Amino acid sequence: MTQFKHFYDAGQGEPQPGGGLKSAYFIYGGEYMSFQMSRDSEMIYRGSTFGKEILDPDCPPIWHSTACRVADMDDYDFANNGGKYYYNRTAAPNRDMLGDAVSFMESGEASIITSSGMAAISTTLLTNLKTGDHILSSKSIYGETIELMDGLLKNMGIVTDYADFTDLDDVRAHITPETKILYTEIISNPLIRVTDIDAISAIAKEIGALTVVDNTFSTPFVIRPLEHGADIVIHSLTKFFGGHSDITGGSITASKAIIDRMNPNFLLLGGCMDPNTAWLALRSIRTMKLRVERQMENAAKLADALSKDGRVRYVNYPTMSCHPQHELAERLLTKGCGPMLSFRVEDSREKVNAFIRALSMVQYLGTLGGYRTSLAHPATAFRNEFTPEQLKAMGLEEGLIRISVGIEEPEDIIGDIVNALSVFDA
Image (cartoon, rainbow, N blue to C red; front, side, top):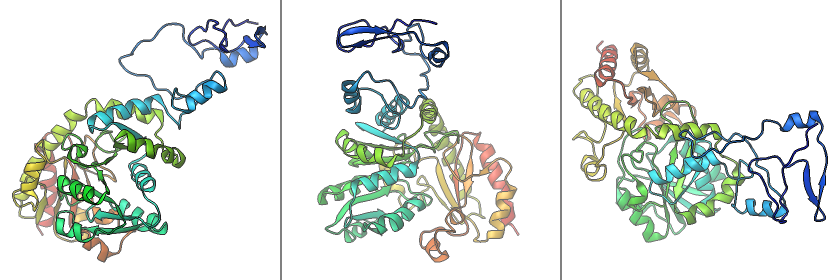
């Protein structure tokens, strides 16, 4: 049997070798007591530590451990007040590293990293609202956000109204004394409408409300909403941040004061990201600028090609001179208009299905933001949640197709889609 030589420091100033085990020697009543650990017990502890110093590895490790040792109750109090890591849900190194990167990218002071984009949205709304409060939301937002507002939040006595956020008079007309949040996307999903975030943020400040922006579609490489007066920025990290269709996650970025206020409820709601996913997301961020810039270049070329195709009724992309917010986009989105576009063809389920089947390279996926080009059919995505009349009112026509543009050669993307459009010739 082995007798370990690691010291438990109870404030006696004794040595404490780094990374060793708290085992054979400990202090009791100011004196050292010792025992010998059995071989079977020792087997449980062996291999838990490493003997050489590791300083800033080029690729950070993944800390899978759900807990870290604490020395005593005083040390636990220190940890429980943010002094050190001790329990994964409360704080975790990989999650904090990712949060630091996201905060920098969005020009925020702090971030909460969540298990999904919807966890980020629900945490933000549930934390900043109470019964009797009012949300004024853009009509053009992610469908499941509408479900959350019209379902769970409504049942809690939180009222949501929807306005055309491209019409500032309509926004002002829907404000009530109870309005606490103005909620919007800057480039909307899936109609690619552009919101004047400077003007919306100014209106929110006039009434003492928070401006919350879902910036998933835009990404920080198009616009950083906090620099335009927004208070909270949300992302589905599943999309362009991940970029490889292999993670699910979300983020909330704001001032430190807002994040500190939200964090206790975030911990209670439990929507934290696991360490492996956080590691993958941080890895993907390193190439995000390269990917998104290429995707935006390809999107502009695809939009131009589709606009010249007689089988396409219209294209939703802000670089197009016919886009209703083209001038606003030129002023606001100076770095590009994002990697997402949508277009409308004949409103025939049969022909749209034939178009999807005729594609060779472009994939039909229930997500977006990957490095490969994919499409979605928005009306189908929400057919179970909304009536046909509601879908049409939301602009989700049967012929509307959304494209998440990838990094392939632009000629290949255009060729595949244009070739498949031949199903509309008949």
